[in-house]
Image (cartoon, rainbow, N blue to C red):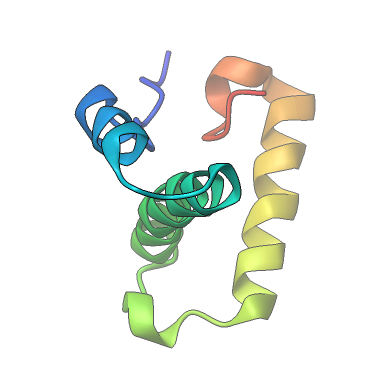
Length: 81
């Protein structure tokens, strides 16, 4: 079973909660940090530099991860939802 990657640590979440930000800004901060972590995973799995990732590669990666989840179960996929 693959260990699920952690996209946002408790410490990071707490720091965001303490920040002087609106609710929507806090949401966007969490989303941005989590997205950066996921993009790093995608780049690593595709063996390309993060800066070189294209939106087509990201979409294709999501399609493949969904296919893995459907065929092999949630534990085999990167995203656990």
